[in-house]
Length: 164
Image (cartoon, rainbow, N blue to C red; front, top):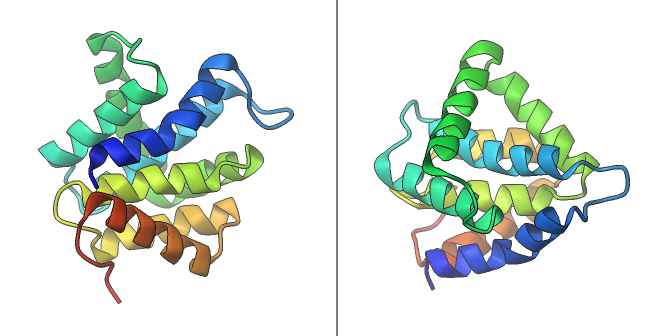
């Protein structure tokens, strides 16, 4: 399996976002931002967003937007995520992202992308797992469901196991 499998997994969410179909009372732009930010927060958990993580995040963003985002807007979006994490802190952003995912009934989708970002380079390390757990907790996703999801991502990408 490959990154293509991960992107295919995001396809239904991408179609829903483009059509404006989200959970009742939801906002497609808020859900898009929450899913993308979940990926960024996990990538930044170890203090560095490496080239593989950034490339995977950008490819996922393009998938979610139907490849309809100019490069300068893509860079601005990533810069905004960096600024949010710096200004509000990782814990606050994890909580906010998880709550938005929960409100949109999209915890699994956001966490799936976030885990895929972690596995994109050196696998899912303890710091990245801790961020996934914070987001999952705020999103109302159980530890067992998170482990299942992370294992599925690992299998989809053909990467190593999550830390025990």
